[in-house]
Length: 96
Image (cartoon, rainbow, N blue to C red):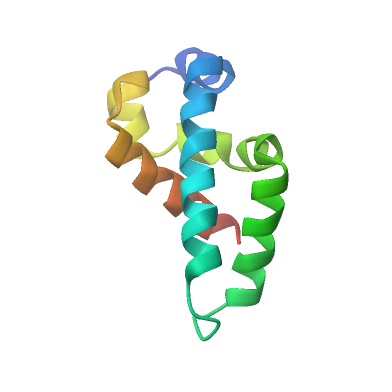
């Protein structure tokens, strides 16, 4: 488990933030392709559009939730891309 200082440092790390940005972008593309009948689609679609237009805004929205996820707390920056993608999607869903 990361200390508070390590968690804060990770949240400011440009490489980690870049990985979170890629995760947000992947999820935004997925959402834009989902059927309109998906629950809360209009809210999700609006988030996806905003993310594709301003990914740094999306990163700012989710970074603290991502960094406090148990998988990130366990592995820090060494978290796999697949696990980070899952963490980003979970964080976005919590905030939407």
